[in-house]
Structures are given as C-alpha cells and as structure tokens.
Length: 142
View 1: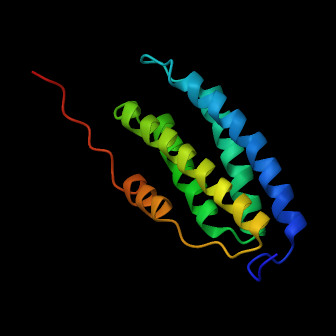
View 2 (view 1 turned 180 degrees about the vertical axis):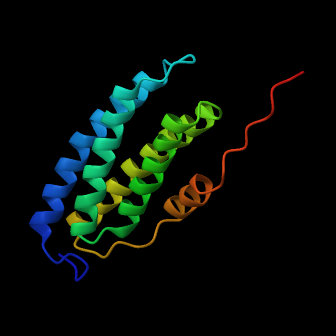
C-alpha cells in the first residue's frame, strides 16, 4: 500500500468493523426518524455507541477526517437528547453525516485497493461546516 497506510491489515479490519457499526447506526437513525415528540433514548444511545466505536478506531488508524465526521455526528445526536426543539434539523444532518461517512469509507477502500494515498474530501469539509453551525429554531407562532 501507499505510504499513507502504515498497516494495511488494520485499515481493512477497520473498514469491515466500520461497516457493521454503520449498519446499526442506520437502523437506530431510522428508528429515530419515526419519532413524533417523544425521544427514543435507546436508539440515540445505539447510534452513539456505533459512531463512538468508529471514531476511536479511525483515530487509531490515523483517519482523522473520519474521526471528525463521527465526532460531529455524535454531537448532533447528543443535541437530540438535550433539546427537543430542532430535532428534525439535527436528525437530517445526522443522516447526511452518515452518507458522507459511507462515501469516505468507500474512498478509503478504493485507495487501499489502488495502493494510493487518500486525498482530502470537500464533502467532509462541507458537512463539518454545516454540522458545526448552530441549529436555529423558529419561535412558536403566536
């Protein structure tokens, strides 16, 4: 593998494990999408556990942008637990983050297969910028 990949076997293991976690995160987010006004804490916790696991291993294999993606998505989900207002916007952003994360994992896989270095992703940067912008909730109509 290219010079970016210090231990290719670890990267391949990370990719397989990340896909498993993402499948569970997707299931949890789909459960959260069914919410009306009551928050399903078990689904939030399941999604957080999956993202946290991916984040930790991404850091270990030096995939720092994936680590940042997971951290931003975790923050969005924590926001769902803490603030009932703005939940739809946060959940939509979390879905976007998972899509960007899946694309980035595909890029990592392709780079590993082609033995080339991973280049920065504008999609990751754009998502991180959106995720770090506070969600503004309109005041209730009078």
